[in-house]
Image (spheres, rainbow, N blue to C red):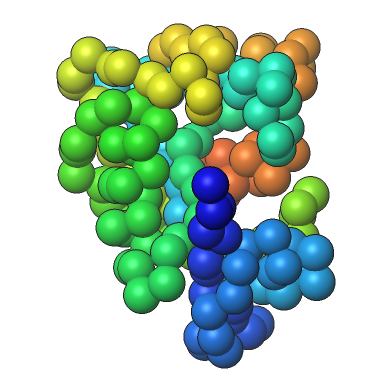
Length: 170
């Protein structure tokens, strides 16, 4: 069986495409790529939090407050964000693009497109991606971050998200 490598766009510090490369090579060489992530909330202003499986290749057993992954070549950030929600949570919902920023993170440097989705459906998480999930209020989430191992890059995105929605929602 021949495995085809996952391809991503290598980009520069301004998010301009330089070429298409295998993701593993981009990570190994420290090239900048693109990631799309989505913070999911419900109508009660609770946020969906999950724990990654213990055998996950990146951040096993860690908690996270956004769902996401690599942007495929030619794919807009919002399309990638919606695709990742479908793959990881088993649902198709609209996502709203909020902002992007350059991350110098745990797994290298990448542009992170941050989105938001309002969830009012039953979830069918992929066990490959999600070991546990639950809804938390902002206060519960703040408390959880103090006692549980969360992904560091995700916490930076969460802080930026909260600042952004605080500005736009008042």
